Length: 259
Image (cartoon, rainbow, N blue to C red; front, side):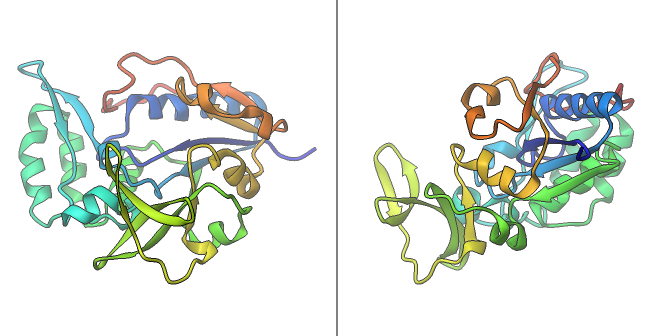
């Protein structure tokens, strides 16, 4: 019998992870305590939606909800580059630092101030590690070229390709590669060659693509995620709905983690 591989997937969520991500981690740790095995965090850093890195926080004094997001280096990066290619404006950290004392405990302000990185994904990971959330968890990044090369082929995918001096995530459709502008508007991106190391899956092909790499036995699914996953594609996986958590869309900023 093989060792259990307990997996959960998520995009980087900003300077503090969403509470539902903490719930996935907590659920995975609880399951590990029951059946053993190892935990794998499938980090979908190939996604490009800049809204994914919003941190929603409540002001400790006014009780108003505030949002903190990275300021990206330029507009093309913000709108179209995959997360692992997005970089941070040099003055953003100092500005965000001034907001944090009203939003989080001093130890998280100090941690935030200690991070020295202009890479969006690296900044997120170093924050989560500094918060003690990822101890003992293996991280597999969907941007990893070796991971991509070893994955199965999928016919519905995105291609990371050069465009106007940046790397963008273009959707394959109708024989071409396009960036979505909104409504019925698209930008066609010229592509000279396609390598497997440039390809990442869409939402509908992500499960079987991921499973061809990880071969997990258990998958922790979010409340919305479980609705669209085609579980018939992976009958060997036991799907586990993540534990319930209040204010799931807000940022997780607790100082003591209750596993």
